Image 1: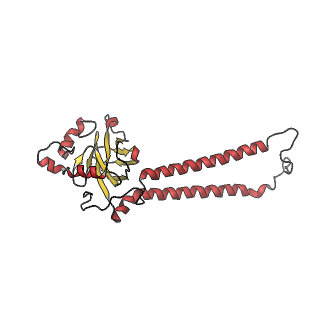
Image 2 (image 1 turned 180 degrees about the vertical axis):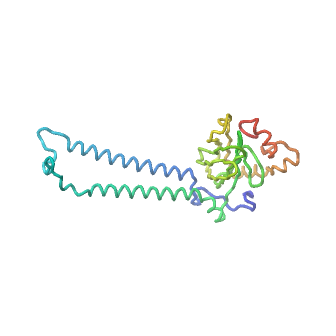
Image 3 (image 1 turned 90 degrees about the horizontal axis):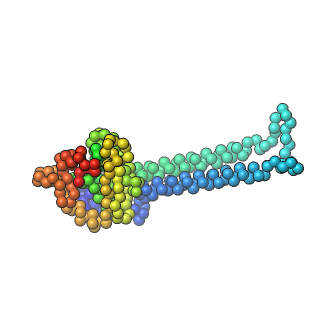
Length: 270
């Protein structure tokens, strides 16, 4: 594996095999849990309502509840279980809601802190700096190389450090469930693990001007060997600038070049 953090990285972190659940899987689990429980509660409530509506329906020649001692006008009703059913339903509802809140909060803490935990345990975490500008994205790798296409290896924790060079943006890769605000002067983080090679699209989800709809970037998930081969050809942006190279053959560009091309191209530096 290539050097992605200042030192030679260890074994590749495998999503699933190492116990790491990608944010996409966590969010899908939360969605399925809420959907399933909501459906169950709805079915129970509607079924119980229909049952009682049928059982106590009006019948001219038959009393649906002959054993009930009905109060006269002006008389306070007695019996009825003294609210036991009401307190039971409230208790069950409170237990379900609190359980969901605690479980969801724990899941979100997992998503927020997993990259740090993996790194502390000696796992492989690749941090890529994401800079938004009107109207494009620039990605800076640990070795200083820059590109307008985000290339990452499979089965590796990819930590995105997101900021903006001008106005508010929002970087998101919907298929990988990665999303973070890009705020000038601040850094926010998001991470993902991609299992299979493929090409995805990153979008801006914060209206930022006339070029907002074209503020996209290509995300290429590559096999580890293919990524290592590509990564070995990259070089720091300042090295390209010192050599007078406007754009390297591997698709990287210097800071000066990216800044010059950014306003002219909706997709950012080529």
